[in-house]
Image (cartoon, rainbow, N blue to C red):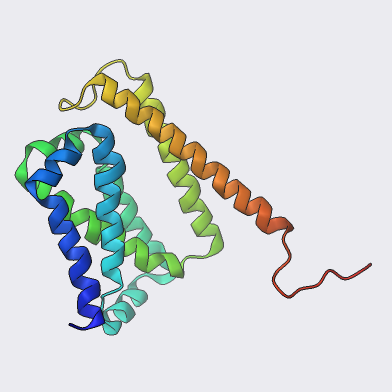
Length: 197
């Protein structure tokens, strides 16, 4: 088996494993596990699938995705849909919505982001990171501040645990990015000597 075929079949097999009834049930019994494990894993596996795309497909997509903007827009709109509580419920209750979830997250979120990220400039990457942090804070606050269940399949306690987890993730990522920005600001590039004034 070629390396390209291996790069295709390993993520595809992992997606099929996540869709298998035992593992799917285990990840969907908790709102926290579905949002923080199942959905990101599907997106990451889609990003790995991007490595298996033939060169001519990548070239064609690059012409459509100047600066990474088109892929980012597609991934943002699709991921926004799966952040809605109604979509989370439907993904558990309705087989056709579950199928859409297992196809759209790898193919319309993970793969476009993996292909677009290298084409994005520093500013656009910063905007993406800051919007991801802001989304964690917004959703975390929403899940904590709402006094009733937003998802009919999950209890209020699970919703609040997810809220705390999202706030912690948003805060952690913000601190990491801030540390990298500060560290990068005061660190000289490799090989560059500080010249005396």
